[in-house]
Length: 220
Image 1 (cartoon, rainbow, N blue to C red):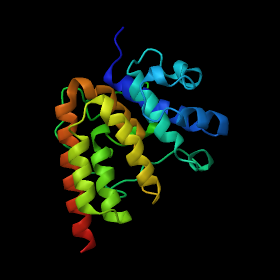
Image 2: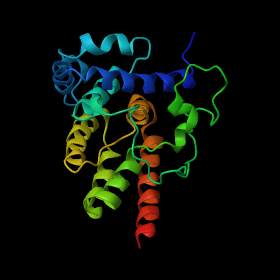
Image 3: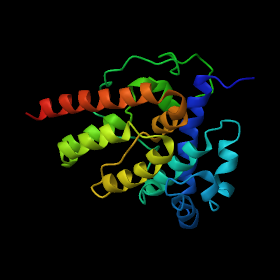
């Protein structure tokens, strides 16, 4: 039976949770960090930890890259409660962009195999990478011109170039504590990048500029 969009998204949330749990052990976290956004074939230390958590969902490189990005965060395993990405406006939903053909309905059917975070916050109103990069500018002092250039560059890259850049970018954001990404949303975007890059890239750019405008307007 084909995997539904709701099931995939529940899996993405569960995968993030499983990787954060794995990273509580320093040896495993070091193995996951060794991926550096590389192709799966160049990550010999990761399969023993990730294979069982990916089985049946494909997009191995997207999973490996997200696992390596999570492993960059030394503090995640020590947090109390579930991992919570930073939001553009706490307590309020971000403006949703127009769903693409790969997005699920805003509501989650009762009894669906999903986790609380997906059910409580409609998927397309959760922050994507564009939103998080705008937050980095508005709240953490990253230069707007430099970040805008990064956004424009990232959204033009194919998978082989995008994944290593994400590793470098996340490390840069981490240096100022600004990388509390919604890893599950990023995982879906990377999983679909080869098939739907134009739509995903457009959404990242739109959410970057919309969020930046909203947050900077509130600061003035």
